[in-house]
Image 1 (cartoon, helix red, strand yellow):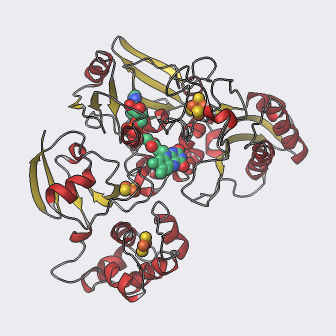
Image 2 (image 1 turned 45 degrees about the vertical axis):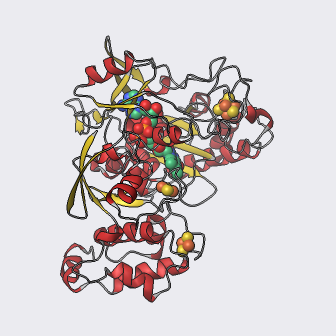
Image 3 (image 1 turned 30 degrees about the horizontal axis):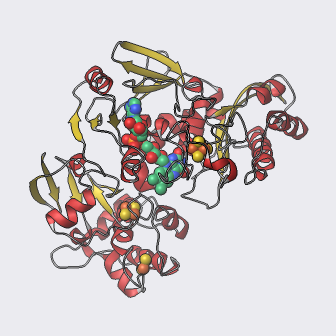
Length: 166
Length: 335
Ligand SMILES: Cc1cc2nc3c(=O)[nH]c(=O)nc-3n(C[C@H](O)[C@H](O)[C@H](O)COP(=O)(O)OP(=O)(O)OC[C@H]3O[C@@H](n4cnc5c(N)ncnc54)[C@H](O)[C@@H]3O)c2cc1C
Ligand code: SF4
Ligand code: FES
Ligand code: FES
């Protein structure tokens, strides 16, 4: 079946089998291997990408379900060569060890910060609770997201202040 | 995953007809349950009829005050909707306690109701399971039963229904609207799921090709004073060991009316009619709450690994009732 998916702003049209998972479409067809494929049963969250602006598990979606929609992957986090504050936070606070869970963690974190620029530790933990990390014990992941909240990118500072509830 | 055909339905009637015409066809909602089962080889459909493009994604208030939820409304949108948060807080709380954000963003109302059991043997094609393969036996009877049923089970299956949302809807007197190849009908949500009996392969009373189009919540003053409490192994991202959805109407110190549904205990959301009867018209006291919970659980038939849930269910129900009956802000939002 012919599908067209806009990935990180670029349109990709391909003829795919209905059984192709979105995660495999992104990795093997589009060639963006930043999205990881872990448990394959919707549990671990390594495969989280944005589908039409919300984080979803891409191993639980068929590529044909993304037809006509937009996807943002970890490769689409940086803007004009500048790393996203979430990416910088993970570097600053040692938010990764093996890095397997990291792309998915960062995609959910960016989404959380867009909606809630100043999340509490509890809110961060709740938002990331559908994603598993075997290495860090989560402490440094939570710190990384807090770092990103405290160091927003210049262009997002104003926007964050506007939507901030306080 | 075995190969299959994929179609997009244009109308609810065409979707129902397409699935009814093919014995190995299935509706595809968000796919968060079906696609997983396909990957595990537990479901092997030859045709998927994608219903997510149908115009069933609205939450609307009807003239009589009923709130109609389209079958394709995503769990996260339903939980966040002001009508649901204010008039049916237990439903919002139940949704937010289920799965995780990334799954709720995809999961639909219809798919959530019809998700299948998380019994580990059902999901493992190498073990006998009457629900997956009728007549093969039930591996859980002598196996891992922490998440299994205490009430209404049979010797053929002791699985529980995993949905949190369905438990809250059951306590809120929801009605399901169904499009079949022959027409439409309405089913009270409390009668949608069935007990396993001799046929655990059937989770619900629906026939092959029956499409859920909406869930309707009747207007109810009591529902605004409702709450969902879920007890689980982790603070987030775990299925219910036990849960309780309660709606309460008080007249001074007396209970004028109430609804109770329990989760994690049976093959369907368990309407606690016995406890309701004990409590209706009586005083809203701790003793009374405990006695009613005791009466409801009197029929419990524990298995090796889940006897602790009898006590857990009693205390969860009694404490949810007393939380709701306590003076002061009764239904502050729970995350
Ligand atoms: C890791 C994990 C944790 C989870 N934790 C929880 C939890 O704590 N609590 C909880 O309640 N749930 C939990 N879930 C389950 C989740 O809520 C369900 O997977 C989801 O609600 C299913 O919705 P869907 O739209 O994706 O359904 P699908 O996967 O699309 O469909 C499910 C079934 O319903 C059928 N179907 C779908 N829509 C219709 C319709 N309109 N009419 C007729 N048939 C239909 C399909 O054919 C399929 O058989 C969890 C899931 C995962 C993967
Ligand atoms: S409890 Fe039900 S679902 Fe689980 S193994 Fe037994 S028959 Fe299968
Ligand atoms: S690979 Fe998708 S959730 Fe684990
Ligand atoms: S850093 Fe290794 S799994 Fe998270």
